[in-house]
Length: 123
Image 1 (cartoon, rainbow, N blue to C red):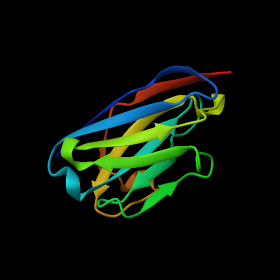
Image 2: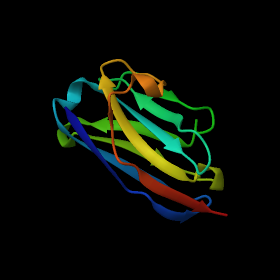
Image 3: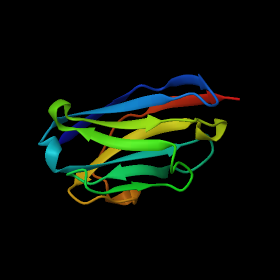
Image 4: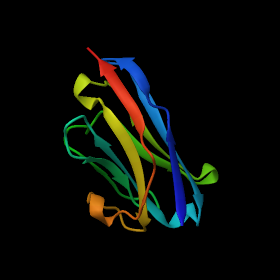
């Protein structure tokens, strides 16, 4: 079992930055690929970014490429999502998720999920 807890969300203005954190506990963090997904009001949850277990490969949604960066810090068993140049359309609840080893953009391939953290971007 892996437990995931997100933090770092908040209310910001367009153009600002935020860094989301996802603290993992339980089984070995090192072996897990991590993903970030988001769900805006009235919309389905969508893929944002993901990173391979060893950090060698990353994937990003087209809508966030060049603005968001995903990373892992093994010493702290934490994954991050650095979000720059935020836009109102980035407003959503952001969820982190974990799966073994191989990076994926598919929500149904992730086994463990956090509770989510709200990000609100005002114009």
